[in-house]
Length: 242
Image (cartoon, rainbow, N blue to C red; front, top):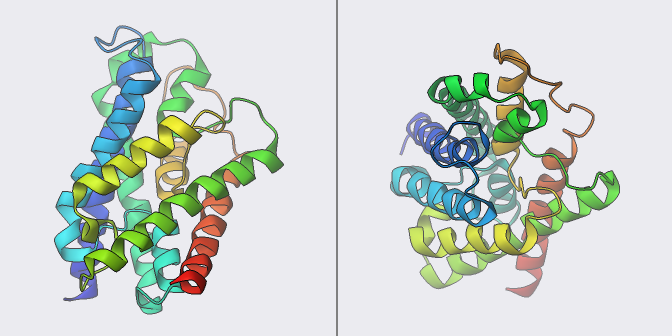
């Protein structure tokens, strides 16, 4: 299948992932939303289901990586061609940016009704509960290690020609995302995906959001480099063990 077609599905799958994932955060945290106060369980369920929808869209065509850390990890494990890494990441980042813009347009009135700049930023990207960047980096790396390692382990049993989150079927990876969020999400908000964090953070910086704060650039390297390192280490562990 042509690389361009695969990248298109990565873009659309990541767009839907962010539309629903950032959307559930907006729904539960922005003022005057009918879902206001839904809480962490709703957010983790919503993100899991967001991944499921992205997987259904992109899985049959691109493998549904939807995450630069997953793409890097699969390439490092010999499950994906290195020539496709950069095009996939570009597509994922663009999809993440467009998804974040769509969430802003959808919830524009609720952004305007919300005064807290931290709450508005939290719709787009992650910031830690306790800012200790070294430990935050470790948390992001470990959570992403778990994500990529389990995806690779799933792929051995499935033995499918196109390896990625889409090769697992939607339900296992949905449960995996929910488990990571519920168990390991409390420290940093479990970005575990540079396209989920950096691309919407860029959207936050560009969009004319009323009363917004800065975009947290001093922390932004953590949810990018942490997941990328975690994905690479997961690939190494998989190759050594399997």
